[in-house]
Amino acid sequence: MGGDHAPHATLQGAREALEAWPGLQLLLVGNEGIIRPELGRYGFTPALMTRVELVHAFHTVVMEDKATCILKEKKDSSIRVAAQLVREGRAHGVVSMGHTGAAMVASVLVIGKLEGVDRPALASVLPNMKGGPTVLLDVGANVDCRAEHIAQFAVMGSVYAEQVLGLERPRVGILSVGEEDGKGTDVTKDASAMLRGMEIRFEGNAEGRDIWNGNFDVIACDGFVGNVVLKSSEALAEGIIGGLRESFMESALTKFAGLLAKPAMKRFKKKLDYAEYGGAPLLGVKGVSIIGHGRSDAKAVRNAIRAALRAAEHHLHERIQERVALLLPKD
Image (cartoon, rainbow, N blue to C red; front, top):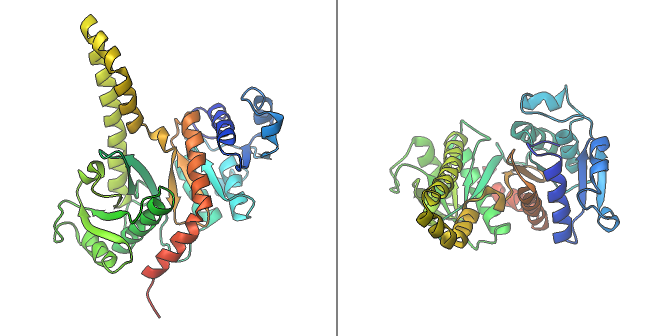
């Protein structure tokens, strides 16, 4: 029920997901009085409804609410109820386009953290210049981090890139101010030292440009830096697309050039579109949690469900648990 375009974009995206993946079953969580009358409008045929269950939740967490409201004031909110379904084993994962803070609180406190994971991390999949994805984490769940937290982020991101994105032996780096081993803060240098003995393909420090040039598949950092990178990247992408569109409208000649360039522009825009990946996985919880952008459209919702489906099929949280266990101190 959360998000700028809910429940309409959510329902349309859910229907598209059901059509795309015949093995998928969905529990639609929200106010049944609002959802049920809309099902026919968005193409939920009787055949599709055999794979759909409505789960009533009266309240919705809105942007003005505190993230912790789901613990007391809004225990029956859609995100809290959805997380409870995962905790009880009725669902493999939760997908939300609503209040990011509430989704994280529900995932960590209701679904629960994996053993050995100090802090779950929010990962973002960004397009790079080589045409592939780069996983950046944490992008906002943890502002202040110790070295062991960033090391865990790197390990969890490596498992996600391998299991869900299909990258064989993903190249992992720690975001720093220089590629040399001696560069960076004490925290980043200590995190690097922890990762050198791990069974992952750790390749040292990554600089800011490496997020985009495709030299790394996974880049770990604290949530303060990661969130700044993510938000500035989104704004830059929108600015580039908007600037190019305005330039093509300046004269008859540029309009004609714009028509010729339109197919290339569409491909370029697709590479920069967050909706292609749907949402950010919260890694380190006992299930699948995909947190989407508040302004997600139906395409983003469908792709967020796809990301959750892939994570569940590859038993992502179990693979993360196995790998994180290698970081724990030995008795």
